[in-house]
Image: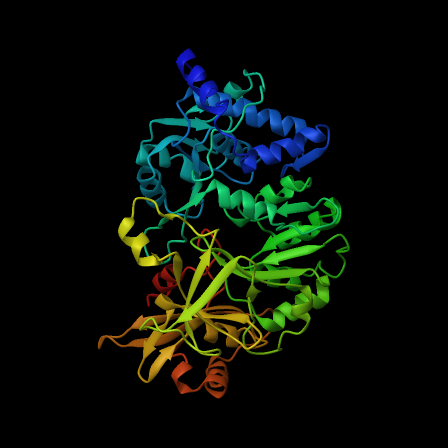
Length: 522
C-alpha cells in the first residue's frame, strides 16, 4: 500500500462536494447506534456485533484503497454465504467502486468472461470454494487477487485489513454511480451485465422491503449474491439481524427458524414446496415467522394456498427483473383467495411503477389479452454494461421491454404467461411454457417440472416436459399427458415427458432449460 493511494482515498471519500448518503452509509449509521447488538450470525454459529461489522467495513475499505480501488473501479466477488460477502461489498461501494457478483453455479469459463468484461480491478475469492477459486484467477487474470482468509490464491484480505484502524469515512459514491453490475441468469447465452445505480437502490431499500414492526431477523439460506443480499441490506437498515446458512437445506432451515426465532425468509417457490414436504415441518415452531417473500419463477396456486394455511398470513410474492426492478406485489390476504387451479397472479403494480402490455406490432392490448410487459420505473437499469446495442433493444423511451408475456385482469392483477424466448411455436399456434408448468403443478403427482421446446428436423418445435414426481405418488405419464389435453387441448399435450429426480437450476434459482435439454439429449 502506498502513501499516495491512502491520500487519494481520503481526498475522494471526504470531499465536501459529495452530499449524497449511500445505502452503505445509511446502514453503518444504524449500526453505530447500538454497537454491542449482534447483527450477523455465521453459518458456524459465531455472532458478530454491529460495532465489529462496522469496523470491518472501514478496515477493508482502507485495505482495498491501497490496491487502487476507488470511484469507478470494479471489484468482483466470488463468495459463499459468509460475513465478508457483505462487509467487502460494503467497503467497495463505500469507496465508490461497483461490485460484481460471481455466482458459484456458473462454469469457470463463464465466470472468467464476466470478470474480464467488467474490467475487474480486484478479484476477491472465498478459499472455501476451491472448485472455482482454484481455476478462476488463472482464467480471468485480473490485476490483483485477494482471499477471504488464508488460501493458495492471493494474499489474505482479512489479515491485511486487521492492521488498519477502523476510521470512519464518507462514501465516494454518487447517486448515478453503479453500486453493482448484476448479470442475468444466462439461460439464453453469456449473461448480460445489468447496471444498477446507487440512488434507486437506496430508495428501494428505504421503501420497506422487510415491512414494519419489530426489527427483522432474516435467514439467508440462498446466495447473498442475489435477492438474499438485498434483503440482508434492508434488514440491517431496519435495525435487524441476519443469520447465514451455507445453502438451502429444508431440515436445517426449519431448525434455524425455531432456534434463531427467524422472522423473515426469501425463497424460490420450489424451496417453499420442499419445506412443505419435509417430515420435520409438523413439529417445528413457526410462530416467529412474519414474512416469507418468494419469487423468481412460476408458483403453483395450490401449493401457495397450502403454504398460506401452514405458515399463516405471511406470504409476499411479486414480479420483478434485474432490468426493471420490483414491479408488483401480492400480499398475505390475497393468497387466501388464490384459485385451487390455473395460474397464480403476481399481484398488483407497486406505487411509482408503470406497466403497459403491447402486442408483436407494438400496439396496446386490452384487459385480459396477452402482450409483452413493458415497465417504466425509477428502479430500472441504466443499461447493459458495454452493450449499447442490447441496451437500445430493451430500453426504449424510458420503458424496459421485459421480454415477458402476461396479461392484466379487470382488477389490475398481473399474470405472467411466459418468456418470449421460452414460447414454443407448434403447428396450430403458440404454447406458453409458463401456462403448461402452472397446470402440471396442480396435478397431485407432480412436485416440480420444466417445459421446453425441442426443434424438429423440419424446423418446427415439439413440446417436452421434465417432471419430478411427488413423493409416494405413482405417476403415469400417459395419464399426465391426457390431463394436459383435457385442460389445455391437444396443442399443449407434450410429445415428450421425461421423469427426472430434480430440475437443475441456474445460479439465480430458475430452471436451467439448456442443461435440461443437454441432460435429456433433446
